[in-house]
Length: 81
Image 1 (cartoon, rainbow, N blue to C red):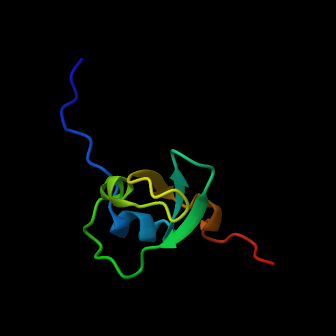
Image 2 (tube, rainbow, N blue to C red):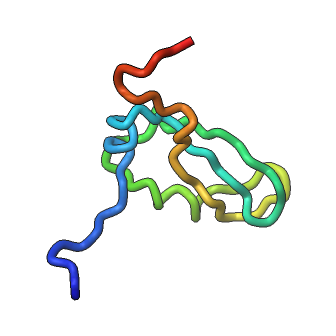
């Protein structure tokens, strides 16, 4: 059955509202992984827009897997050390 509303990609505003302010970026050609802070980018930018524009500083590959860095997410009311 078709969906009534199309699925829209997550934006930086939604990501930030969930307590995440950076991406975990994985190069698809070599084993390099980096955390990339996106505080300087506007809230309306969709998360999937970043991956194809990333350039690996190790091998020079253009395009990467960029996902919200959920490791920094802290649920509201969570205990912190």
